[in-house]
Length: 396
Image 1 (tube, rainbow, N blue to C red):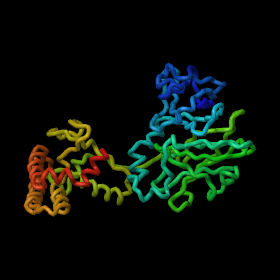
Image 2 (spheres, one colour; image 1 turned 60 degrees about the vertical axis):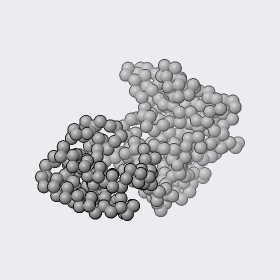
Image 3 (tube, rainbow, N blue to C red; image 1 turned 120 degrees about the vertical axis):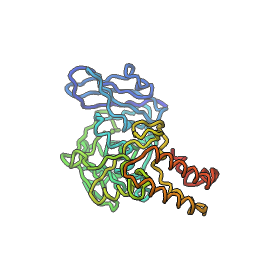
């Protein structure tokens, strides 16, 4: 019970206007920017807000909106939140933020987070990666006389699967710049990493830097430039920082290829490029040094061959299925005799591939006949009870 005070500050320059802190809770205006608390300009680019929040709630989410001419919202891909767990009535937290621009936040989207950097979130990388927690798992340590509890928060999007983010600094409790004694951090999602440590008040102003370690614990990337430096406001024994990892190469660059699945038709395809042909594209990209593959929409568009005429937001286009692989799968899975259907599949490959131009209506018609026959042969019951299908279905 009781209340704590969040002493929120941010550096942001505007000619005229105001900055507000909006969020879903009553304290932050319930996402209504007209009710959200306004920050006070302290001169130049310095803005501050003293906000009392009830301790009945563990976590407060919020975001900045700049109201100056045209309004500017900061990115909400990376959710901003402060946990007040562990605080007692009257405690004050010095929250020192930065404005989270939308452009860098692109690297926190699922395409980058899970696929490009996360490499599919394979379990084999989990042991050496930062532990994943939720914001409400975080708790402030009760400070001892002469101590300051500091919670570091850093946006570090370019962390390879299996690598981990750490923070080191001048105080003894932060390793005294020794990488082997650096403070471990946890991942709260969307490439936001948080670490917490107690330091002596004599260690303030606090100097520190972030670093990324590989699977073996060796430093894979260190921040460039000057050390981060933070002071704490008078009367505060808790401080939360908000930083962005300063990479030696400021902008992420990579090369790739964009293509329609239908256009990657191979000798194994059934008259049109198919999902399985993407494996060969992956091999080609690996050989040529390309890092990204972007495919045009693959949703079901019925008889319309345009990938931009989807009739469903969820269903994938059935023309990209390879019937011969369906036969092999169910033959191996259930021991069903698929010899006749496999022969039909081979004949259809030769028939539809005799013309290297894609005859979309014919492909759709012929594939529907064959896939319907496969479904009838395997039976609906077996198709639906397939554990691989059930596992996939639950993820959707």
